[in-house]
Length: 294
Image (cartoon, rainbow, N blue to C red; front, side):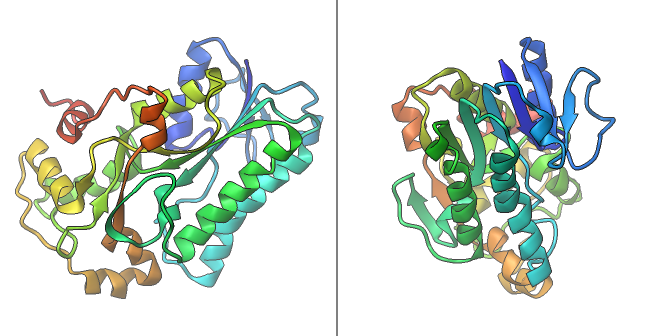
């Protein structure tokens, strides 16, 4: 297949490009500037040059987006998050000469908002807030491709667990120092997914025409944050007695703290109904594999 990828050098994108290249696909990357981290046989385009891509693209995989938890949500930061998701997605649609046959775009379980400990699936009503509004507009931008005839798939991702990046790379130092533990009471949902299952979901959506619309891409095991903390500390052979007060996080991060203090248990209802088989259903097994512990 001929595949265009945005966000090719990110945590998911790096692993995905390696996987797709090993399968013999022809890759094109949408970049801000020419990036030497990408293999020489991946043709690179910027938004300004994307109109030069006159070949028919089979799949556009939209992974781009600045890290939502990287900085507090000032008005300037909110604008950057919006532009790197919604504006970029619409710009790709406008710049491409030919509409891709299939579009696979990312979103997040932040779509459901700041429900605390609620169990949700793809048909659940969201709780309003910035995270929901951002995801909602991002998804709407992706589905504009369907109006042009593209089969469009949107994955609402949970916390992606894997090596060499992602959430664990940020959490690992604290847990290794024995500072991991509950956030508040720790009862809020912690919806996770192994990187390998994210890649498997994307490839499945590429190849299987039954994939269409919105899917929660989260492990079927629904847990609370305190359960994650206990399990990860156990895998690292560290204690998990430290509790971070919600108020402290609100003081440090403002509105963005809701990502840490609230959460849903997102069930991958549509994936399971479609027969998708997760490689990692159990958190301890996933963490053991990532940390190379047996």
